[in-house]
Length: 175
Image (cartoon, rainbow, N blue to C red; front, side, top):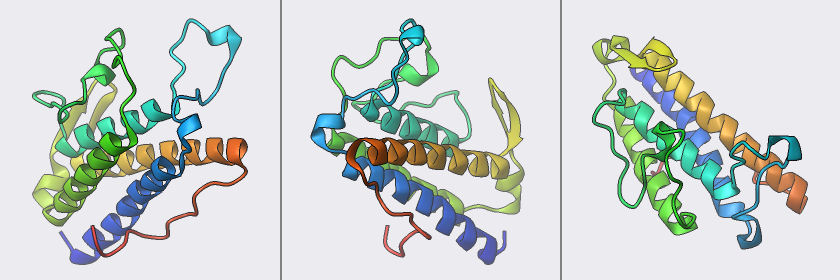
């Protein structure tokens, strides 16, 4: 695969991860367990807290970089709750430090995955409950997913604190 494409994909994917990192770091302690929205009509539904949205984004980032659900396990202390809609949530929220470590691990995994990308691996088919795509398309889908949640968290911070992290143009040179 052409180095220009790999570099461009990494710069933008890394920027999405950096935007999520900024949102994680910018969250004040008193909002870590705040629900991102509250609708009394949706009380029967799971309404995620700030920390859980960060975890959700990282879990799927990690899984999609793997390219398959089969055999996937997130690192300890994280649980497979994302794959089981009725599964138990962690008893206590994950800490900023735990999620920061997971984010940095995922960032390295993403950069390594993109650097190693070949035409053959880009074309590999990946099957999920929602459909089948090439690994190249899964990378783009994954980047959009991370960025969507980073934007969601930044909007929440802006609404609750009056400011949010600045937009990241492209991933920094250092991981």
